Amino acid sequence: MSGEQRVLVWDLPTRLFHWALVVALGLSWYSAEQGLSGWDLHQWSGYAVITLILFRLLWGWFGSETARFGDFLAGPRTIARYLRDWLRDCTPSRGHNPLGGWAVVALLALVLVQAVSGLFATDDILRSGPLTGWIGSDMERTMTRLHSRTFDLLLILITLHVVAIAVYRWVRGERLLMAMISGYKRNGFAPPWIAPLYRAAVAAAVAVGVVWLLLATAP
Ligand code: HEM
Ligand code: HEM
Image (cartoon, rainbow, N blue to C red; front, top):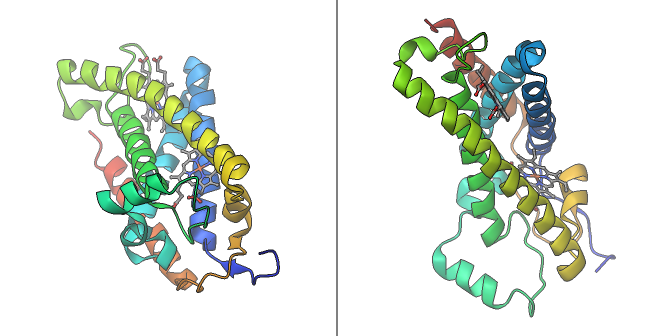
């Protein structure tokens, strides 16, 4: 197997997105723990998270083959077959596997809920999201609770995510982590179509523009 050709399965934008998301979420967590002294960092890291997720959503439509939602969102039958053969057939997937594809969507959705709820959250003293003026105080309380509860769920999902990567390594022998770092897998796959980088630059510019507009229209 190791003699097989290396194939680029994860393009640079997808890898940069992943590791930037890990850093930005880490900063959001760290700054939340710092309370008032971390407030500036909390806001900026949170805006970075929203921008990254918007970019990834666009990349899921206009990006490289393996980054596209259509490439990795499998139906129930494919998932059932994949689960049934999980131990018997250890053939690696070129991109996300049928189960992992939905885990990706769950992670993206939960991170987005976390960051967007922050825009409407408040500690009722000095820290308030920029869009609290759009909603009433009841809704503010709901969003603040959502912001707090979602974070607990997110921690659980991220832990499962990292454990799953380790299980795939030790049970099925798949080096998923190395692939998310280098971009390459070595399993004789047909190389996926890789999108030109200018597309990523356009998607990033659109994501930055949308977040900028949102903040510029804040009450
Ligand atoms: C995904 C990115 C984010 C993460 C991981 C995150 C995480 C957290 C955490 C863990 C807390 C403490 C919650 C608690 O005390 O129970 C918090 C509080 C808070 N966050 Fe975020 N946050 C994010 C994005 C944002 C954004 C974009 C804003 C708005 C600019 C924001 C505004 C707030 C506010 C106002 C509080 C205080 C709420 C309170 O005291 O209950 N957050 N955040
Ligand atoms: C803040 C914590 C994390 C979040 C929110 C997160 C989220 C994600 C997301 C959304 C993807 C899909 C990538 C894409 O298609 O764009 C992914 C994939 C991946 N992540 Fe993470 N991740 C986190 C931490 C980590 C850590 C610490 C590791 C290292 C063990 C890791 C390893 C991977 C790997 C190897 C993949 C590719 C999985 C596959 O081949 O299907 N992630 N992650």
